Length: 301
Image (cartoon, rainbow, N blue to C red; front, side):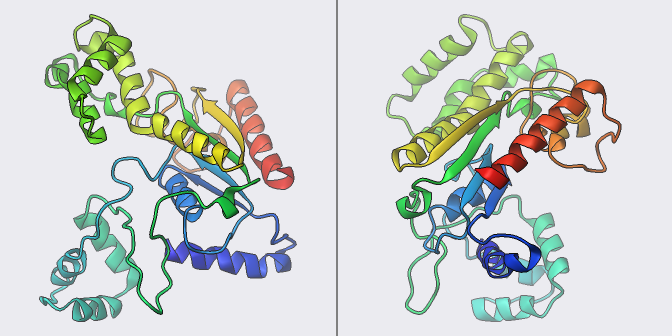
C-alpha cells in the first residue's frame, strides 16, 4: 500500500509531462484493487486522486484486513537459509535478495496477504491507522462502484451433486464471520429467503451462489456505497451481469453456467492473452460500451 502511495505521488508530480492533469486523476481497482482504492480513501495520506472506480471489493471483506503477523519475516528468512529470531536481522537478510525471488517465495509459502492497521510512531509516516472514509477526500468525489451478478460462482463450479452433503450448515457457517448474537435465527431466515424449504443440494446451486455472493461481497459494497453517500460522494452504481466469451474468470476456468463471476468484467475492459481475441457481435458491443463508459468517466467525471 505504501508502494501505491509512492506511485500515486509520482503520477501527480509527473503527469503533466505526459499531457495529463494532476487535478483529474482517476484510480481504478478490481477485487483486491478495489480494497486498495477504499483504503486510500480512508488513509492518513493526502488526496492523491480525484475520482475512483471501485469494482467488487471492500476492506470489510473476509481476508482483507487482519492483525499484524510478525512471524512472516522469520518464515521467509528461514526459507532462504537465515535462521534468526531477530526481526531486524531477518529483514536485513531478506533485503539483500532479489525482490522477485522473495515475492515468488512469499507467494508459494503464504495463502493470504491481509493489511493491518498500523500503530502510530513518532517520525514514521503511517498509511492507515483507522478504517473510515476520510470526508475531506471523498466529499464531492465522483465514484463508480459496483459488483457482478454472481460473484462467487467459482466456489460451486467444480462441485458435484455428492459434494453438497458437506454444505448442510452453509448458512450458519457463512454467517459466523459476522459474529451475530442471534446467529441461528438469522441463518434460518436467510435459508428461508434464498432456498425456502428446499434441501441444500445441487438443485439450489444458483440460489446458494447468490447467498454466498451477497454475504461475502455484495453486502459490503452496498454498505460502502451508503457510507460514501453519507459523506457527500457522487455515486454511480453498476451491476455487471453479462455472460459472453470474454468473462475473464469463467472463460479461464471453462465455466459455462450462471451469471457474471468475480472479476469477469475486466475481460471487457482490457485485452489479455487468456481470452479469445476474436470478438463476436455481442461481446464487441459490451467491450465498446464498457470501455466508452469507463474512459468517459475518467475524462469527464
